[in-house]
Amino acid sequence: MIREKRFELILSELGKREIVDGDELAVLLGVSRATIRRDLDVLEERGSLQRTHGGARLVDSDEELPFHSKLLAYAREKRAIGIATAEAIPEGSVIGCTGGTTLMSVVKHLKGKEVTIITNAINIAMELAPSQKAQVIVTGGSLRSRSYELVGHVADRTLSELNLDIAIIGVDGIDINRGISTYTMQEAHTASLYVTQAKSVWVVTDHSKVGRVAPAVIAPISDVNKLFTDPGLAPEFRLQLASAGVELTIADM
Image (cartoon, rainbow, N blue to C red; front, side, top):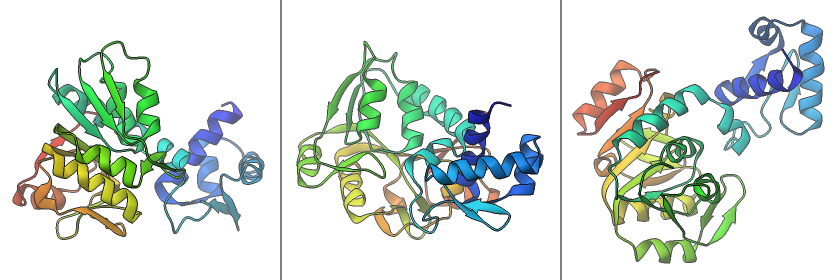
């Protein structure tokens, strides 16, 4: 296995677990413990992780994960969620998209549909730039480097003047009692405007975010119409979501 591919897999494991053991990585990647040590040293030099005794952890792992780590974590699940969500969107829809790595997977599969996308995330806009059919409107605002989202009064004013058929929300947590949530108040407020302006609210997330609560509340669970996730969702959460009136779509893997 080439080195850069090993780096990608190591960061993917960190994105899932936030801390990894060198011996476990050696078994997972089929390489020697010495190779893993060298790989972790290089990744630490790049600022991608912090070495620990016998392994590594994400830098600031008790806070929001860096964007590249989110992108690599649960990549297969996110792809499946993206396909399922895109297939459910009717042609001609006006769609509001927050930022997030799962949303990137959704819009990758929307490029062939005639839809209008309003987004406050520059990574979403860039992903759709090559599309010959999708019309893209970017809100403007102040850039948040952790998530590539534009926030603040410019973004909020733009969203408050638009009507959406569907709001597709990426989250850092979804909980029956605490609703959908993210890491910062500014992002939560901007995301809440998508909810307010949409006829239907869809949440897209891998199963690891279900049952978690992030610091800033976007909206109560009662505002969520549909959840698109992967087969890793625990049975108890499926029952809770159904009881709360959330329509659940489990993506095929």
